[in-house]
Length: 328
Image (cartoon, rainbow, N blue to C red; front, side, top):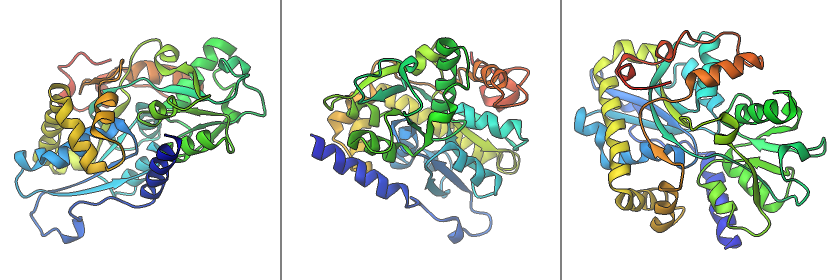
C-alpha cells in the first residue's frame, strides 16, 4: 500500500507541473464561444472533470471551446485571473476574499462542495495544535488558503491568537505535502484535503489532530467557482451555460456516485473507481452549489488582519444566479 501511495503521489506531483488543456483558445475563431477554466488538485475539483467528461457545457452551448489549466494554489489561480488568462477559477473562499479585498474584479458563480479538511501528523508527541513547537512545520497550500485560515481559527480558539502558528506554515501543493508527510521530510504536519488525507490516514502512524469543521464551528463550502467580471459581462450566455453545467455535475455526483466514480477513475487514472466511490461519499461531504461560510470567513479574516474589509452580505460577492439560495 505504501508503495502504491508513493506512486500515486509521484504521478500527481508530475501532473502538477503540466497544464491540462482541452481545446486551446489559441485555435478559436472569432465568434466561437469559449471559456478558460482553472482548477487545482484534489477531490474538491471533481465536478469540473465530470463537466468535461459528460460534456455538460457542450449540451448547453454547442461548439464551445474549453481550455482547462491546473494550478497548485488558489493564489496562483487568482494571479491568472488578474492577468486576464482565465474566465473561471476554482478555489477556496479565503483566497477569493483576499483578491476581492484588493479590488480584483470577480465574484462567486457557485459553490462545488463541502468537505472535511484534516490536520495530519506522524509525530507521536503531537495530539493537538497546543503541542506544536518552533521546530514543527505545517504544510498547507499557501497563505490565505482554506487550510491557513482554518488553522488561524483553531489557533484563536485554543491559543488565544489567530496568528500564533503563522511562522510554522510552509506553502506546498497538496501532492508535494502529502509526499513530504508520508516520507517524514521537511514537515511534521500537513493540513490536508481529499483525497490525499484519506489515503494518508490508511498509513501506519499517521493520525489527525484537528479538523476544519471544528475550527470553523460548522460546515462550509470548500471550493467555489469564481468568475471574472469581464467574462460575466461580455459573455453572459457562456456564463449561464457554465453555471447550468456546474449544477448538472453536482446533481450527477449526488445521484450517480458509482458512475461518477468510474468516470473519475478512467479520466484521472490515479485510484480505482471503488476508492473514488469511498471518497465521494465520505462522511461530511456534500455536493451543493449554494455558497456557505462566506461571511464567517470574512469576519474572521478581517479580525486577524488578513483582509481589510468585509462584504455587507454574502450576496455582495456572488452573482445574481445564487441570490435566491439560502447562502451565508
